Length: 93
Image (cartoon, rainbow, N blue to C red; front, side, top):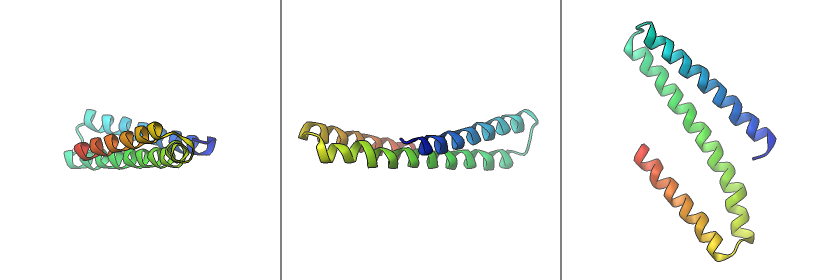
């Protein structure tokens, strides 16, 4: 990941931290459950965006480099990693 991409991910993670602290305060102060759930969904969405950014970067750097310059074993390893991750994504939903 280049510096700009790292900063973007870090900024997003900082925002997520703040959202989670806010949710904790909402629970502590007995806020309406549907309001809390709405904020939880916002955090889940934000985390998925971070996940997408990291995966995109991985595909464009590590995987692309392996496909261009790696041997067959390295290429197969990268493909297996991606397939394993996709399988995990489906389970988490």
